[in-house]
Length: 265
Image 1 (cartoon, helix red, strand yellow):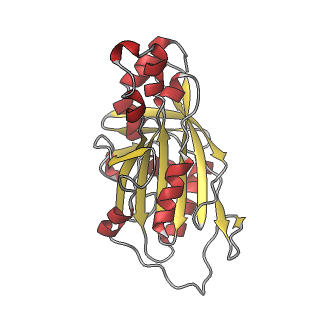
Image 2 (cartoon, rainbow, N blue to C red):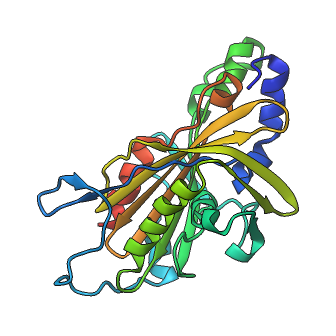
C-alpha cells in the first residue's frame, strides 16, 4: 500500500467497508492435536469417539467473549455492516465459499447455528491522558493502530465441525490464485491466498493470509484463523487500519483467540 498521510486518511475513512468482509484476510495451515496434545495433519476423529452434539445459537452467544474478559480490549455486538447470512455473500468460485464465510464471521460449514461479535483494542484510557492541544500527528496515527477482531462461532452435529475445518483448508488450496466476492453490491478481489502458521489452539487450528486488492491503493494482507473445539468452530479475522496504512499486515491478536478458545472448553 502507499504510505502517504493521504493514503492513511483514506484507509481510516474506509473503516466501515474494511470491517465488512470486503477486505479479506485469511490463510491456511491446519493442525490437529493427538491425545498427547501434539499437532498433526487435519483428519477425521476416531470412530470410537462419541458423536458430537451441536450447541444452540443461545448457547453460542453465552460462549462469545464478554466485556472484561480480555484485558485491554472492548467487546461489542457483531458489526451490523457484515453480511447477515451466507445468501448475502456471492463468490465467483464455489470452492472459495468456506474461506469467504470464515472471513465474514459466518459458519464455514454446513450449519446455520452461529453467533458473532467484535473485540477491539481499547486505547481510550491512554488518549484521555492528553489535552487536545497536546495531541500530535503521531498520537492520531497511533489511535488508528488498533486491531478489531471479528469473532464467529458456529456449532455442528456429529463430525460436522471437522468437515467444516476441512472445507476451509481445502478452500485455501483451491483459491490460492485469488477470488472475487460481492456483498451489499460491492465487489472485493483477493489476488492471493497463502498458508500461515497455525496457533495450535483447540483440537484443530488453521491460519491463512489473503492478499486483497485495495482499489488502486496497492494490496493489503489480512489474517484469519479458524479453530475447532469439540463441535464448535471459532473464526477470527483481524483488521488494523494503522498497520495497513504503514504497509504492515493485519494480524489476529493472540490474546483474543486464546481467551475465546479457552472459553469454549
